[in-house]
Structure formats: structure tokens, C-alpha cells
Length: 489
Image (tube, rainbow, N blue to C red; front, side, top):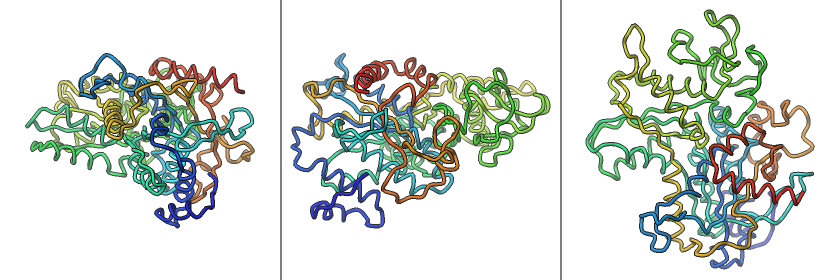
């Protein structure tokens, strides 16, 4: 982020608190980027999407495939064409600093706000860094709308982004996923029937209280009078394990010995305790070093998780324990996948819910009376795509012809540590170490990370294979972009 010192920029940035240098610098940069740009030109700009990691690509996949409207009349009926068929997109995964859900847990909310503002500043700007040598480039387009494809970033940073945009004198819509997820959870409820809704987000999103508020607001808007209980299970470490964050998972570990650098749920972690007294209820998979522990399976100590499926089993079992202890909770009717990483594993969530519904002890079902016959898994992506389309129509920014200025419909970037970092700041695979990542202070306009093009070197084979399998439309655009980037190296 750079400082620009003109009277005009100083005037616009006074709408942002002078005590918040990151937002102030962002508003100045954005003002300079869009100054003198006509509305007709902004209409041709791409749509910006960002997340703390690759999970936001599930949102982009839904946007790309969405057919909820007639593209000519904008009536809410599909016409067999993608709603966004003539739009282009820029996606940013803040992989260097993920998972975002941990920052509020350790009281680093302001630093998280800084990261979120910097994400938006990247999308609203023109520069990025080359993969080779991290040289600054200026060929990226600004954007005409921003989708926050991250629940934690929506909960903590949407107002900050909107403030930066407003301070720059722009009318650019910022669409978040939390209200969309809340709408989806409410829409599947039968009129007049008491129900429980579960939300499984990051722990940081839980601490914000954003989902219970949004669910209540949407229920009030629909004038629902039945009892609706909301249960939240902060999925500590799950998003990180899906994106391969070293502090939560070690793919390919050659033995089942516990790790000293592990930070996820364990039998010793008070923040996310694996209760060994109910160990069978979790249904953990001990094969293939998917569980790490000392002792034998009959006498375990220092138990740690080492597979995404075991993270899901832990958190859904803990959720059902919450409901069991509440005793009078209405049956669970819907579960909001409250982190954009989680739809990658929607089948695993569904399988685990079925296992828990059928789980018995002493020939008695433990959880069945708290679970409806059919539990809907709510992916906020569909509702986010709907809100994005409606906002572009309202602003008259929906493209009626393809944006020919770009070689592909999609550009994809990921953050990595800036070159020249001391070894003390990095872990053994080149990412930020846990202590450094979560030990930084807020208010620094400069960044110790860079946005570079997506590539095998900064994502890894496991993540790339998952993208190929789970988000095929995105994968097609990503492949085009990677081919283009290879020619520019």
C-alpha cells in the first residue's frame, strides 16, 4: 500500500478516522484509481471476490453457474443461461494470513480488520506482484463490485470496506455471505413449526454474534412466530485443515506421533477439547495416521486430529452434545455451512449427520430426538449469487456484452510471504509461522505479504486436485489464467 499526497485525497480520506492509517491509506489509493473514470467504463470492470483462502472459490463457482434470473427481463426465473455469462472476475485468496477465524479468538480483531481492508484495496487497485521475483505489475483491472466470500471477513470487515469505498466517493456494492446464509436457513423452515438451526462457522465468526442476529432479523422480516433456537459450533481449525495450514494438519505424515506445533482440537486444548470420556461418540477414523496420539487406541493420551473428516466429526459431535445438554431444543432442521471452505466437504458433513442420527449407546439413540428426519445443509453461495445479481441490476452495472479487454474471464491471485523474510518468521514449508502470523500488530500500512498469481507452487497438489474435482467451472477459468501467467513469467 502506498501513500498519495494531494489535497483532494486528503479531503476524501478525512471521512476515515485518522487513527486508522490502513483504512486512510486505502481510501486514498482507491480515490486515485477511480478518479475521472466514467460510469460506463466501471460497468465493464470485473467483479472482485476474496476469501482468506481457497474456500471462496465455492462462492465463485455458484456465481458462475447461477441461473436464477432471465438475463433480458431480470425476472426471477432462469432462462437457461448463466446470470453472469458476460461478466469477468478477479479472485484473491489471502492464503498467507489464513485462517481468519483465529484472529478474534486471540483478541486480534483490529489486525484482522487491516487484513480485510487490504484485501479490498487489492481488488480495487491495479497492481499485483509477479510470481518470479515478486516484481510489481500494473496490468490488473479495478473492480465494479466486491463479494466477501468469507464469513469471518463479512462479520468483522464489511463495514470497514464500505467505509473505505464511501470515503473514496464511490458507489460500489459490497456483498457479504452472512445475511445470505441466514436467509437460506430460514427459507427451509416449515411455517409455524418449532425448529433449531445450527451454524458451523469459524470460531471468530461465532464470537462476532453475526449469524444469530442475521437469523433473527430474517425471521422477523418474514414474521415467523414459531420458536427458532440457534446453536453455534465454532469449527476451530477446520478451515485451516482444508487449506492445508501446517498448524492444523500435516498431510502425508508418516507416523501417528503427536506434533509439538499442532494447534487444533486435542485432548489437551481447552479452547477445543476432545473429551476422551465420550471418545466413541466422535466416530474418529484412526487409519492412515488420521489421528495422532500417544499410547494405544484403548488407552489414549495427547490426542490430535489429522484429517479433514475427523475435524468434521469432532465439530458436529460437539454440536450435538450442545443440543443434548440443552434438553428442550426443538429438532435440528438446517445447518449453515458458515465458512466458505466447508462446502468442499458437504458430502462429509451429510454423512456425519447421518452417523450421529443413527448412533446408539446401550441400544438407545443418543441424538436422534434432537434431529429432524431430513436436515438441510445451507450453502450461502446460492443466496450470495442472487444478491449480487440484484445489486448489479439495481446499479445498472450488469454487462450486456462480454468484457473483451481481458484475455480470460477470470484472474486468480494468492498471497504469499514477501521475499527476504527471516527464517524465524517462516515455517518449514515457507509459510508464516504460527507465532509470527498471529503476533503481528495492527496499524501497519506496509505489508509483509504479496499477492501473486495462483500457481502449483503456492497452493500444492492436494488443494489443486480438490479444486479440479469440486469447482470445475472455476477450474476451467483457473486453467486458462495459469496458462496465460506461464507465458508471462
